[in-house]
Length: 123
Image (cartoon, rainbow, N blue to C red; front, side, top):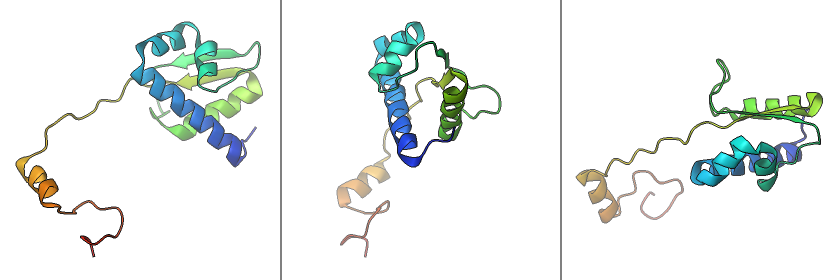
């Protein structure tokens, strides 16, 4: 059953809340493993009574960890079969490297090397 654009957006928003909560809150991550139906409901994902819930922390071969389209397809499959599989990858590593002296100099001098919109320093 294909989702319409609004249903897809609602699911993606709720799934994103699940990911962010599981990455930032150890208690939520533990609850997601022990009581997945409750944890998912807290984030806005309501499942039908009797639905099977599977939480996968290691994406299966060929599913591409973090691929949102795969997760949407799994949700659509769950709507048809009653088996809902959620891929919850481990917390992404954040590069905590310090800025170089050149980077700091560019920021302090107001240099606009990475601007995303036209402004007085870019034009």
